[in-house]
Length: 357
Image 1: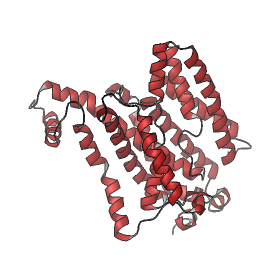
Image 2 (image 1 turned 120 degrees about the vertical axis):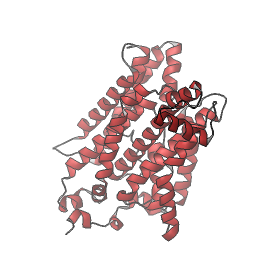
Image 3 (image 1 turned 180 degrees about the vertical axis):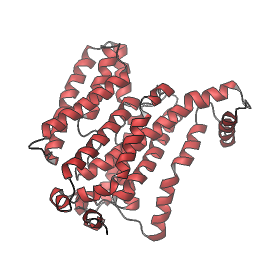
């Protein structure tokens, strides 16, 4: 017999996360299937795109020749594909997947559709850590510093909000705003006192890019992103219960504070690694879960896996656009904002008013 938590239907989800337009029947099934498989063609396309263009058959041929141990192509082709393009594409897909799932999780846990993974001051803390490593503590690796200060900011916000063994949602969000403001002020101090060249590097890092990603960069963080994302997906049905509210979740037998902590810490850890790897990528963790809700509805059992797939596809295509569509590489946050802001405006216009109450 199903547990009380499992018997709680998703139709009772609060209005704060019912933002889906709700495709029906075969159209919904088709849309879900296309989203689920979208990372595969996106990966192949991304491996083809660049100043050193390759056809699809060449991509498969180079990969196959490397797997079987033959050298059927020029050395330059292997270098571009495996040492430059592949780590960048993999990093973009991992970051898009992790940030999107983290955004969907936090929107469910905090019961707020306007929440993104950076709500707890994590992005401001990571930006300060990176700026500090670039401008002052040059002996400190930028990724490590960004990761450490991002987690520190999240830990401060969580500690500030915790009262009497519980973490009220409103207090957590306000603590995140306060923490973010503090680290933003510290970041401004570093920027004002930094050398001109260091300042340019800081600004480009803050706006997000995969330009500096290499295999060593990936090796230091991919396991945390994959592990944290898988943990959140495996626990996804419990989000449907948490979204009902603390009182109803407790009445179903759930340890609310424990699962809140697990989800928040997992989302923060994944987001911290993503920010350390790529810088701050705006709006991805906010709009991708809403895109999925418009297709598949608000059930987290479907929402989280599809957010992972669509997030990976979306960000790798954005990275393709940033590095191939213009004469110079455009920071990721510029493109994601130009795409995400009009979409979010459209979402506000088309969503039922009760969905945002």
